[in-house]
Structures are given as C-alpha cells and as structure tokens.
Image (cartoon, rainbow, N blue to C red; front, side, top):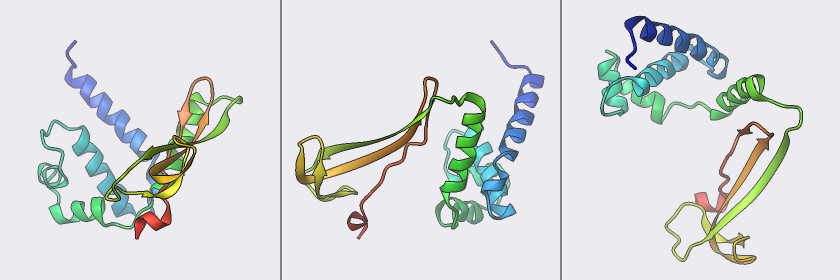
Length: 156
C-alpha cells in the first residue's frame, strides 16, 4: 500500500500535535525546538541518522544540535513522566502493580560499566558482576517505565 501526499501531510500534522504534548517536559523553548528537529530527522528519509546529517538536512546549525544532543543539561525524568501519563491515559488499568527485579551477570573483567563485587542473584552471593535493577508498572495490558540502575562506585 502506498501513502498519498494527503496521508503524509496528515501524519505530519498528527505528529506535530503529539509532539506538542511533550512541551512541558522541556525547561526552555530552544530545547523543545531542538527536540523537534531531532525527532523529525530521526523519522525522516535521511540514510545516516547522525546529529550532523540531521542538522544539515534541516538547514540548522550543526554545533547547536550536537550541543543539545550531547551536552545540553536536560533531564529525561520529565519526558518519562509525560510518557507514563500518556500511556496510562490510553492503556492504564486499575489493577496495575509495581514490580522491582534484579538481574545479574557474572563478569570476570572490570572494563564494563557497573561491574563490581556485589550481590548477584544469578549465583546467589557476592561476586564480580554487572547487575541491573528494573522497576516497572505492570497490568494486564501494559508494561511501563523500565530503568537500569548503576551503583555509584561503578561511575568513578
């Protein structure tokens, strides 16, 4: 099935309306604008999805987009809050529960992020391992909000 020009225009309009729901998650208007440039670039037909290529194809300043992606001080927490609200509004159920799970992998080397002598459930004792902790909300229809947690000693 091939999309008509009208279908594409309608999709773009709906995408812009959807993206506007995320505006409260950005502290500054320029961050929101750069987020929109980035999203359109990632969804566009450019073969290489680098920030430089996206900026050039969008007639935007390359360094500014690179700064937004790699160095701009913004937190993913407000974005996650908007995402969770939208999903709950669409799919949420009253029977949801919160699950927290640990998943460990024994590692002999220390070059990977998060590897340390720590409790590893896979072996049932303290071992040199990489451990991920997932927290999520689960109901019959959705899983929402998984996050990896890295120990502070691993970040030194």
